[in-house]
Length: 342
Image 1 (tube, rainbow, N blue to C red):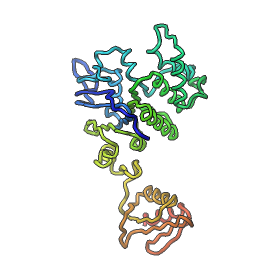
Image 2 (cartoon, rainbow, N blue to C red):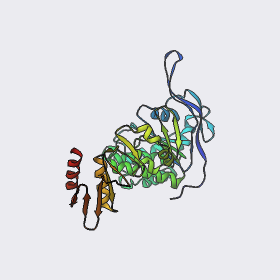
Image 3 (cartoon, rainbow, N blue to C red):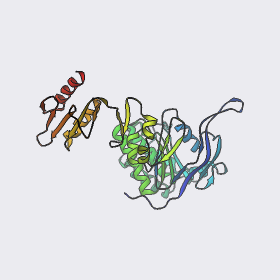
Image 4 (cartoon, helix red, strand yellow):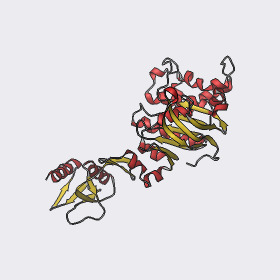
């Protein structure tokens, strides 16, 4: 899918400092000297350890807490010089735990996105209603339009909130942990929906998330806060190549595996294995080896385990101090565990 044309800067920060003001003029700084940009047509994921300042920066960008120093620009306009109504016309926000009356229908919630477009009585025009219905259709909730929030699944409620900011008709959308309470399929569906909205509609989207593997797959750019409270802006691939993910999230027991774009157990070098094969059985054997923390190598020595998978017969042939053939992953696991315990 091609990116939407154009590269308009929707949000920019200059020497931004975020944190909290304390008593007697003191302040607790979490992040400093931030020069960030969000452009049209790009999806940015924001990752970092717990307590690193992600939510604080998000809340500062959406004007829920005051900045400590520096400037924020929305579509080239200084944040401090525009009204709340104008900010709402430029930026839509979805927070982790929004407070809505659970008896509200999907149509009611999404209609709130048209608030700044209606007259002082809040009366919607036919154009407003069309925008609401189009936004609901975009997130796949047309059949739930009269359903109340308490009748929806967590994933459906999240899509209703995304439809609300679509109805708001803004170029910039900021979301704080939009997948926090969702199961895996709904986490994936939500992130793919946001990716689609960004690339097809040309909107700039920033979302904070703990879904590192999914973030690496869908992001046009990543903001990463490391342990030194530095915010690094980069392509996801460059974060992998430069070792930032490992140094930020890894430890002695887990490390980031670039081929699977996920964290995996660091192998124990007690027994090394070489595996040949190409298919589902081979993939399952590789997962088993990683779960058992066996190191997988390309060039085996005479003391290493050789595993050859026959995908057609679903046979797993193992050469190590003799030859063994297994027809199930469970039997192979029992054999390898015995080797590791010897």
